[in-house]
Picture (cartoon, rainbow, N blue to C red):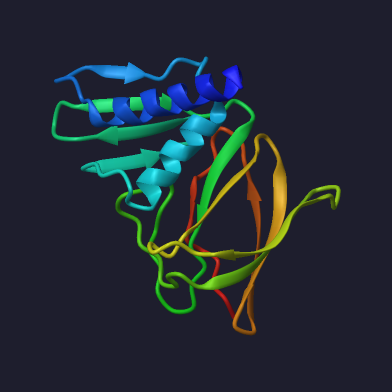
Length: 178
């Protein structure tokens, strides 16, 4: 019970911190904050629950800006990699670092069959997922791995190899459904 209360307090502190931009001050969320709080913060920016001038996510940090001098950075979980995929049929955009507040995919609020397996064939994910209002499917995958991903929608399919190393992109907008 005590741990749940502390977890809730930690989540509230992260969310309040997102709203409180100290002029020109850059702050990192301490590593003690649990991964769920950071993942929830990413989800809230991605879905528009939280607003910012800009919120982007690299392989290591969530970066939130509000104005020219207000910037917050949050370290991502050490063992998980954030990846956002926008499957498309006709329209896409070039992207490497996902903008939670700016990237827009073609297929919004659609259901997809998503299958991900690692190099050894171990299934990491096999489920139906719905894209968000921005047309993206957000995933948290184990870091430092290479995966084969298959996405199916409306009788069409896209396949790709993706990886989750420090140098990899967090925005995948190249999976055309054919």
